[in-house]
Structures are given as C-alpha cells and as structure tokens.
Image (cartoon, rainbow over all chains, first blue to last red; front, side, top):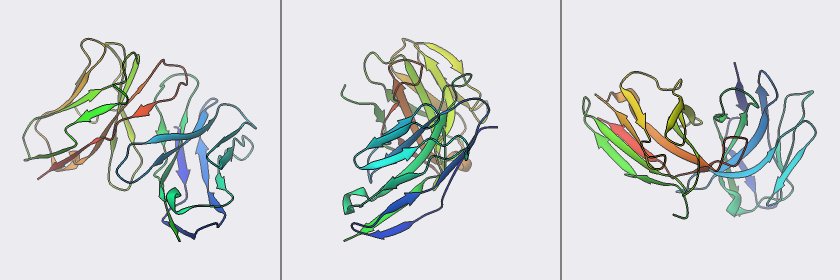
Length: 113
Length: 114
C-alpha cells in the first residue's frame, strides 16, 4: 500500500540553525508530494509541493526536492525562526485512483530564541 | 466564506451518543474530504465527495460512520453510538477540483468520547 514515513520529533533547534526533516514514501504509481504545516491553533496549510521527479518545491525559505531514486522528499530550511515552530506533515497523492492525501505522522519543530 | 469552516470546534459526547459534525467548504469547491486525526498522528482519509456524490467512503472505520453532502456544499459527518476509540480530531478539506489542486483544511472538530 501507500505510506509516508517521516522522522519522529520533537526537533528542537536554536534560531538561525539549519533544518532537515526527513520524509520517505512508498507508493504504487507516480505520486505528487506535499509538505503541510500546522501552526498552533490553526488548520493544516500547504507549505510546498512537487508533482514529478527532480522537481523542487519551495516556499517561505523552505525547500524539498522530489527524489524518485531514494523515494524521498526531505524538507530543508537554511535558517529557522521562532515563528517556524509548528508540526510538519509530509504527504502524497497518487495520480490515479483515490485522490485523498496520505500523510506521515508529523514532526514537531520547536525553535528556541 | 474565506476558508473552510467546521463546527463545533469541540465536542464532548457520552459513549453511545450520536454526534454530527459540520463542514462548510470554500464556496465553489467541488471536492470535499473528511479525515480523522488521532492524537500524535497524521490525518487519515475517511471519505470523499465530488459535488453531492460520495465517490469514496473506503476510509470510514465502521458502519457507525456516515457522511453526506446533499446539495454539493455543506457536508455533515455523523457518528452513531460513539465509542471511546472515536475520540480524535475530525478534519474537513475542500479543493477547487479533483486533479492535484491544493486542498484547504478547516481547523477541525475535536471529539472526545467519555
């Protein structure tokens, strides 16, 4: 079946540190890949996406590259801010069949000043 | 409205009670999804509507769960005879169309069954 595995949290970093949150996937077919973010008290928001191999999604200083050879979509940011503290979810959608998102279990990021 | 709205935000139900959770999607959005999110987990798919048609209900965990979207806009997720394992956050999402368009999520309804 289809699944998404992401690193367990919490990840605790100091402000301006480099961030990597690992995400790998298993899918039948050719998925589109997403990172969603959930800030405290808010709903899930799309952070970035990539629809095919070697695509790079980017937004708000975050980046992730769709790596088909390693079935990965790791999230990176060069310099985190306190305001980046949130829960980050990696997810996929297949290009055929069920059109719903399959999510990882989420990674909580805590950025300390 | 400006975003996906869900009500109530919080619901406490006694075991065995029926509950109804409401979702108001973004106006004009064709696709509507319900997800269940257990504590510390990612959301899991429950059911999907395209307009008023329920095209996929394979994620509903039991026949106690029922969803409808009679006029292709507002949707209701109903849980009959609630059990403690139904305690979770129920998320609704809508998108403009089916094909890989961005899904916008509501803030969810946190259901606690006591």
